[in-house]
Image (cartoon, rainbow, N blue to C red):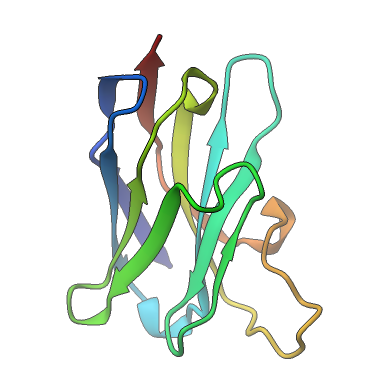
Length: 129
């Protein structure tokens, strides 16, 4: 099992920045990809960004590309999501997730929630206009 704990959410204004953290514990050696998803009220949970524990591969949803940056600290088993130029439409509960299955091909994009095995409880991000 892998446990994931998110932190860093809060209430900010349009244009502000926020950094989310996700601390992983347990059988983290079994994980290949860490992802961030978000879910706004009344909407489906959607992909935001992902990163592999090894290497430099990162993946972003078009809606956040250029504004958000995902990174990791392997020594701390922590993944971060730096969110800049926040907009009201970024308001959602943000979830950290972990995927065990390794990425084995260029067309294997880890942007589907069904690909992930473990989930955190989520952290609320609210962007006021």
